[in-house]
Image (tube, helix red, strand yellow):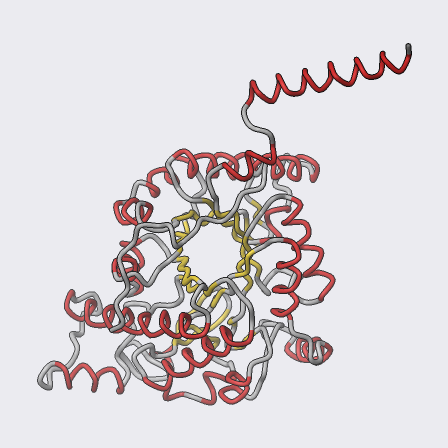
Length: 420
């Protein structure tokens, strides 16, 4: 009799579960298969973060992301004038095969920490761990054409640098926070070859899912007045010098088109070594990117070079965030390629409240975007004022309730890419 009671209870429980699931939709496993794909990404950096400095930290952080149903990581691999993985190309150009620790302060201490890394390959650890956890890995060229003024790269190759109008060295430098930066000349053939060699090496040596360029794969509009670029401009303009107004429309277009032509070469370098890898771009909104940094990413998208777009919409209120998502170039991109939204989860000692993060994620979804990526890993979990660690963790778990696949680039209607 007791056996039949248990059987009856089991049957009744199964029926009730089935009714409940029928009322709310598909079974969880079915929902994850049939639900729309979504980019669920996060950037991993070596600044204000410890996640890349040991194999155990890599494993712990990626496991936490997998547990919270993320599907993509964007680890920095080019930062502060160094590769963050062992690179023969970088060693030839800088004398260092890699540099996980940025030379911000305490240089002697950082050199000791770097030496302790030995022959460790951070990127290989990320790729292998991510593969086991079902995460995609798209390495991120965080610094693009930017480098510290005192980096071995800049000191060894002064002829690779561009400048503003004026007298070097002051005209070749700019201040970002406490740190002095220089810009590699994106028009110089040796700079271009160095970047292409880094990309080719990366694609050949690691089973990655793509390559990401960001807002630093560009040039501040005030730059381009170095001797090499001036001479190149003269050759193409019957001896005429570049306009003294850096915002001149033709001068802006000429420089922007040169960068676009180089992106073509980057795209085909990726595809030659790893045909299924995507070229991802994480820029600023289009008008700002073009006007102030000569980065014409809508043109890149129209030419078919951009296969995934994650636009940085770092806003501290929902109204300005929503307004930025209405941008025409962003809306056009959304109709052709997987287009996600970069959301600021916080900076050092400045975490963003989880309530705002939740609102921005839901707004991006509601406006038809293909997903989100958070900048950056550590701040996703860092509590803001009025929150507890438990509050933050539980809220993050509710953002991504069931697993989702990344959007398929192949199924996206986009222009055919012709080899130029």
